[in-house]
Amino acid sequence: MRLPLTSACVALAAVVALATLSACPYYPPGTVVMTPASYDRSFAAAAGAMHDQGLTITVQDPSSGTVVGTLNGGTVTASVRQQSDGSVQVRFDSSGAADPTLLERISLSYDRRMGR
Image 1 (cartoon, rainbow, N blue to C red):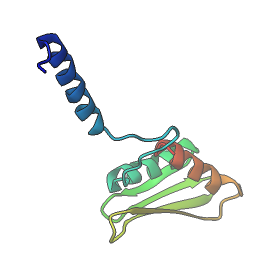
Image 2 (cartoon, helix red, strand yellow):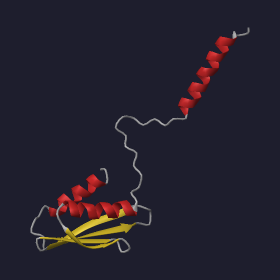
Image 3 (cartoon, rainbow, N blue to C red):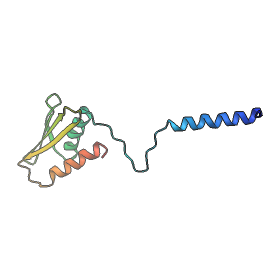
Image 4 (cartoon, helix red, strand yellow):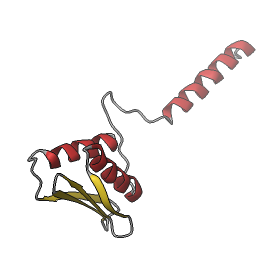
């Protein structure tokens, strides 16, 4: 039995539409697809987070991965390191900081800048 031309076109369009949809990835609601953070973005976010919390940046050296800032006589150092697996590790340390919540606030500011 031969299909009329319009039925054949509708059938062909349906097959093409289904084939096209099958190539699209589906992520359930709430799924977040993360890509590894780049070194440059992480370094900029670390320096920006320290600035956000009122520190005066005294050293900002991307080649060594070091950012140093001061606030009220205390010093905070950010160390940004590229790992062998391609990930980036960022660590904040303080010495002489009078505010016990300073590192936590810097960390939260860093996360916000990284979109977390």
